[in-house]
Image 1 (cartoon, one colour):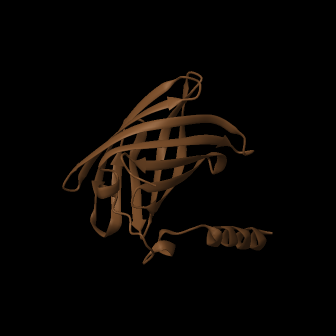
Image 2 (cartoon, helix red, strand yellow; image 1 turned 120 degrees about the vertical axis):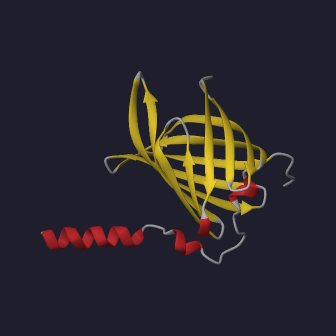
Length: 175
């Protein structure tokens, strides 16, 4: 039984995407360039059954000075609620990034290759008066120089809670 469980875990681990899978692919994501200026995003949260439970739009403004960036986000949800978040991002060598925000526990660790960026972090998520620490496995894919697609799996204790799908568009970009 132990051997069977070990083999199953290795099989499942081998099925997940790795950032190295995107090395050498185009277009190459330069986060400093993409997250510079005004962007608009729209997305949704789906629970683990696939049901859309919340939709939202995000107005963003990013700026960089060298390897230090700031991204201000203003969320508007379909129920009328609002939320803001400010990311402070540091670009490190070899396509790595570190991100900090008030509702991120510790630091977000990011790594990019080709058109992809993977962020992993713990988010302090308020739900009905309580705050839960949930793990975010956040994949961003540059579609073209003006458009990025983001897919995030949210989990707690290794149990998948849901998924966020988000589309970013640089302001003033033409289709």
